[in-house]
Image (tube, rainbow, N blue to C red):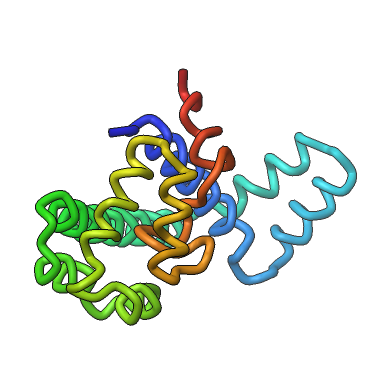
Length: 169
């Protein structure tokens, strides 16, 4: 399993959430000062403006948001594991149950039936083996759009997935 790219992406997500959280606060004098400092390229003024916004209340909200993010990530990883196990065991009913009511998977649920689930499993195995040509052919055979299948974010070809193999090395 490729854990390094996931960790890199999660790290970027946390940094992004913290940055967005700081600037998503109500626009008060300190935010204006921080914005002006950024526009002027004045690190010292930016730092002072940012520090003035640090409060225990904001910290507690950040902690709460971070805990919720971890809970959502854990739930997503558990669901992904159930989906993965169902595919690997070629169990359509378990897969259908694992996909659940996820609205992002509506098209997939409409297209993948018990009759063509074996082809879906074969497509998944091809992706796991980095045989994107075969995976693309099987996807077309199933009637899936280019970016549908196991995950809408997992594209065919040498795009994002291949590029992420070297992250963190």
